Image 1 (tube, rainbow, N blue to C red):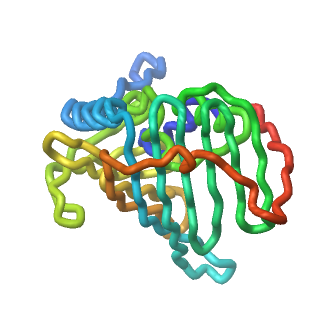
Image 2 (image 1 turned 135 degrees about the vertical axis):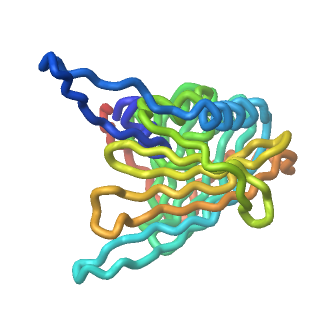
Length: 250
C-alpha cells in the first residue's frame, strides 16, 4: 500500500476534472482550508513531542449483513508508547482480541483466537517499525497513523478538500472539528483546543457502500503514564504457537 493510499485511512479528497474550452483537461489544486491544515499540523507536532503516552479508545464499526441490515461491533483499544523504540497496542472487542508489541526492534503480533503469534526484526523506532509492519506485513489500524513521525503530513497528503467547521465538544472537552474527503471515504476529526491538541474523536464513513457504514473512535489521552519495562515484553502464553508473518510486499 502506498503512502498516499495509507493516508486515506484518516484523510479525505475528491478527484474531478475541469474541461476547458480549449479541450485541455486540467486538475484543480487542493481546496484545503488553511485553518484545517493549521489544526492538523499542531496536532501532529504536539503528539511527536510526547516521549511517553497512552491512548484509550472506544470504537464502533458498522457492517452490513447479507440481508441489508446495518449492525455495529465494538472494540476497546489501548496504545502505549515510550519513545524512541517501544510500543504496545491492545484491541479487545466483538471481532478481535489481539496484541501488537514493538520492543527495541522486535515486532510481535499475538492473536488470542487460535493463540498464534508471529515475530520479526524491524527498524527500532516506533515510527519506522510500524511503517515497516504496514509495508511488509499489511498490519494497519486507523489510530496507528498518529504515531508516525510525519503524522501531520499524512493527514493532508493527497487531500483535495479539507474544511474547518469550528469548535464543538467531545465528552465535555472543547475541540476543533475538521472535515476531509477523498474518493473512498469521508473523515471527521476532532482535535482538543488549548496546549494539548490531541485527537479526541474520529469518524470515517465509506462513501460507496450503501448506507455509508462508519468507523467511530473516541479517545482519552494520558501523557504521564506509569509504564513498566515489562509492558512491552511479549511472553508467549502457555499453549500458544509461533507462526510466520506473511509478507504483503506493499
